[in-house]
Length: 70
Picture 1 (cartoon, rainbow, N blue to C red):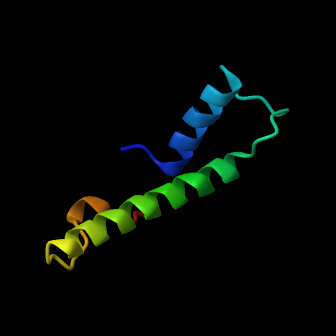
Picture 2 (cartoon, rainbow, N blue to C red):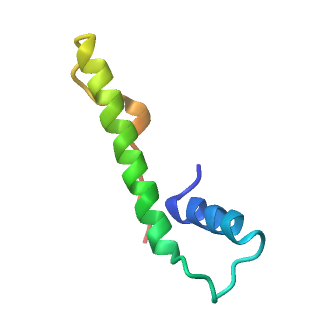
Picture 3 (cartoon, helix red, strand yellow):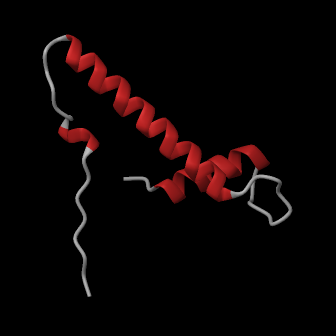
């Protein structure tokens, strides 16, 4: 599963046309923020579509679980 950081790095590579360099005007944190905003918009749209048919819950596909190891 792709993480926000890996998606942001892929996006930055596409924008730059290859390897990521330090002289780019776009910060990877900005791209990660846009990814979060789009994810939230997709979830919101999905929830509202389900409410139209009478379902009032978040689908399990949107949930992630993590286990911490020390």
